[in-house]
Length: 324
Image (cartoon, helix red, strand yellow):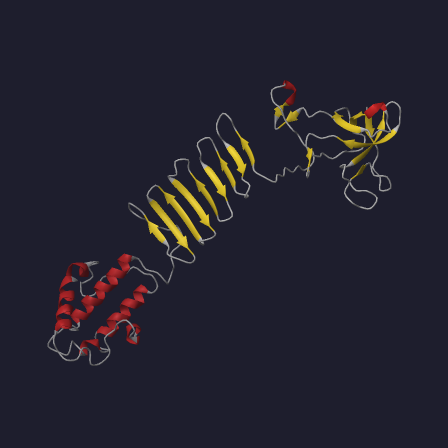
């Protein structure tokens, strides 16, 4: 039996390097005082892993109690630490992972220091009963799955999460700069360098719970009401009278432009439009009559006069007069 010596800057109890600063080929050396003789010896440390570039290690603390083997019965023959003991200074852990370790129902490694497992090849931890596993292959790919085969895969080209039956799938593909998500026949692909795809076998709903864009957005109902009011107002002003050059006079300051400006002034602040034009105050009245003005407009556009809007005042895409 022995105890690990006190560690000081002048006399280290554990040495990893020789006098030239090179790593010891024998592995670390530990200074131990044998009991009850009081003889001090320098010990190698036996481990359950030893080989070419292989080894295992747990740090020693001063006063740790150890078991020392003396080859040939002599402390000068290269003593070896072959075990450690718990005692008052190094008490046995009664609770491990929240469980009572004194019931003799499970095995464990309870470590006080950081612990590293490194392998130069593949590594696998597997449950024989369920098939759950954590694995690393020789190329560095990692896979984690439970007993139902739901898995997480991490490779050099992609990271993926999928269900055991492959009905649900999420992948980040680094090589193709692509994110793919699939649920049964529904599929979304976002690509940074190619085609992006959204495919659903049924209805696609897109919504938001955020606040409205005040002053910058209108509802579909407001847009339709604005369009109906505009067409009806233009019809009342004679804008679609085929007898004139497409109602040129009606598009001047005396007809269509004030109507358009009035409607825009209502829509821009995001207000619900008041009673439509020419309905005597009946909200929605123009909705029923919008078909007739549109029909008149179509007839005007089909009028075979040589010049459409000779004044250039008819509002349209690209026309500055749209916002007169």
